[in-house]
Length: 298
Image (tube, rainbow, N blue to C red):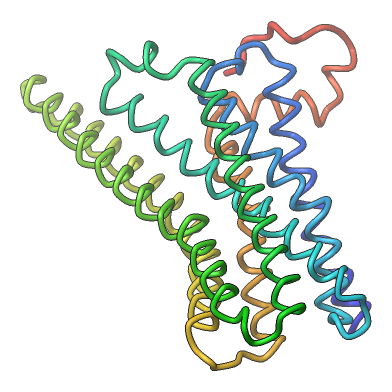
């Protein structure tokens, strides 16, 4: 069972690393992809890649053998790295939603408001907040051991604040933004429909656009919430009550949340034709046969 578990979890790690590595290479190599939006996707992919390289192996060792066979420091480092990189991934998703809001809802001022400088600040702030939360969790765990029950309130407070800033606030922001995007997109589609003589063909095209927009937003938020909500609800419940959850259940929820890092490349990259073209060129080895950085990606 341990061998099978290692093989399965190891496979998830390989898929996560390979998928995010394809995205990173594509954005860095192809000049067509050098746009502000893709820099946010690059930050997301770097966070998810590090999750696959660092968090997955730590989590595999923890899941299979548990902390009973590892020093306490191992578990604290594992938890700190896990929280830091996972939070960076979530905040990157939040930044992407903000970028999409300006692109769809304020297209005339998008290029002036969302430029390389603004994107750089967003990325730095996301990683800084993630590092602060991760380090704070580790410090709180060390203090709890030193002073025993007297630090229980501090531990609960730190965990609750981490959940709020790492999950609940980004979720509220993303849900609000994507709802606004959907409303604006639907309003624009209806406007187009009203100015095209309501022909059957144009009506069908608009209807298709609406369905595609709805489907994309549903997949983006649905997969994210499916992966992360059970884990953070469980973590919040445990920090605010004296109840306990069995280790296998908690680890299952943790792996479900980590799976989001594996799925992100498929959601945010594979949906776009230019990324698919870039992936084909990388996987086939074509980029090693000459300079194709200026290639026009379809």
